[in-house]
Image (cartoon, rainbow over all chains, first blue to last red):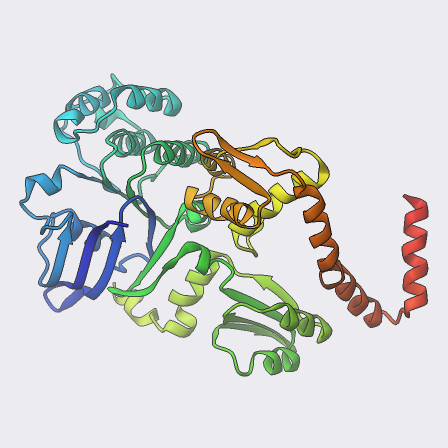
Length: 300
Length: 119
């Protein structure tokens, strides 16, 4: 397995605000990563550092073995699709796709054309006349058809409807299967992308909260619900990451898998066990109930 | 896909079920990793992990450059294994629930017989 990105103690500060706080992580070749976290967690800043759009204040960063900023041979292998990508005023989508091969050596014009048809994108209309969803489709098409060895999608689908999003997921998977490359997906629609991811990196307040194989994360937490006394007894010695309750009933989420014997015991105690999806787990890990981020969220 | 359990395990089980039910005959080719991935909208690495478990226990064999095929005798072996797990997977939870409702073993047996006759 070849390492594509290596970050060590990577830090980015804006005045007194630390957007990225000494994070360590690596990205391996040929995997799909989910870079997840709440608004303002530092996801976009990390991607901007990795793509040489920002200079770090500290730490080490290697992308394809070199610092990304101002190294053309590194930047040529990157594609970054931003949430609100800007284009020259009078450009049409056709212009964007025509100029793409100058920036991306693996550009596949035929694939781009198929995607244009899939998304029903009017290619002769001026960019500023496009709807929000159509503008997002332009970005998604560039991101896919560029086949860059390291591709970032930062909330790529503002305004895209559910059908268009599923076209994106399907084409992404099909093309990734044919042309494996490293893809970083940053999104709030975690439930939709959960199964596409091979690895999950969860960012909160500029730090890494979770850096794990997606399969390991799935089913790594369980919610136990039932009579408060029984729930409390069952979860007493376990790492609790979420707790809700009403009257005599409680619902407690624990970090950790239950084995067969524990499941049977829970059933005997009359407790209900429910799986915790990746999205629910992230809400628990970054939510206000235990992480205590409420104050900072207000300040932001 | 069921969110509660690892997806690679569900891929394994689905192929096993197809073999047990006869949808996938012995000697038949199973879908490729990429076909599994795009059909279920899952990461190919997850699909590979699920299929590798079938290769490891001899249910499926790889033929280089051609694909993956159900081995001869796979169905018999799977049924044997499922029977061994049957008590843990189905009978114990059934007894727990029956006891909660105050049903004894004879009543439970009678209920099972009645279901068999109806269906």
